[in-house]
Image (tube, each protein chain N blue to C red):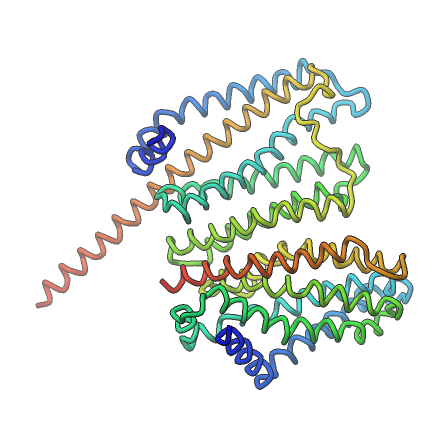
Length: 222
Length: 253
């Protein structure tokens, strides 16, 4: 357990000290959201209606951008091989890295969403629901993404390939996230079943994704 | 040892697989041609037009078998991937590699015929309906498998990584299916060849489904044969280059 925490702390420290990764993801998030009204026209009613969807999709793309680097640096300098041969199972090492990605990217993006949502005339009453669904859904994005990052570690055109592999896997998260926000908009309090399913998807991917990602990494290092 | 085990073990020898598949392939191909030909005869000359849909109902005889084979294709890829990762069966990777493009082609055929059928019936080529969306996602998963395999130079590694992705896809397909089912629906549920379809249409549909399934098997066997031959040619070329290198270094001394 202490090795798990040490790895988590190391990855978070790296994310904070590098800084650029998070800044780039947030900047990308802002730019994508700013581009859409330019394409759709400045109709505030329309933007207010589709704001949760735009924010969710921009979040997926921004998180995807940073996932490509999840194992790359460790692979280049050899520390990934050290993790693979360490007493801590590689599955847990992968889980620590994915968790660090969630804390360093998923949470900041989720917290930024309502602020950027102001540009889209997002209904202020929806803000708690938006943040809650994003916090509940982003673990699934980080953990499922770790499988894609592990599979494309040695691939040519890795970044584009990662998007092709991982985006279809994000569909349930997106659908239940949006439907939970829709439910909150109608019912005033509580999110209903969609929010629980969203949590279930996140928990299931936290349990299953490290196994697949670790298998993929092992195949490439043996 | 049970007989199934011995059959898969016997097939693990590529030479024996080549012999067996060479013997079986002509029969499967001829059966596919016969069944599809007979089904097309029934479809165009015997089966009645639908009382509501008119002649457009004939699209069904291609659309339904394609949709079924789209799913069967993924099942074959997934089973082969399991065989590769768990049992390290030497032909499993060949089978998975051969099945993916065929499955993708049938998925695309189901999407295109469905789209052409949707225009006269629903008034639009595409709706964001649960069934259509989940088949589209199946198509994306196929594309992901093909793209991942082609992006790696080491073929054995590419096969294993693609197998991991195929198994992840199997785990997530039901979730995707349920999520889009709850989200939006227009497409009718499957009738499963049951009695709600009149025999005058059910019989040609069944024959067509059998014919297209045989076609899939024939294409899959041929694809596997080609892949085995391609690997042999590659191995021979590499051996030749290695021998050339040896001779050159011997001559230089």
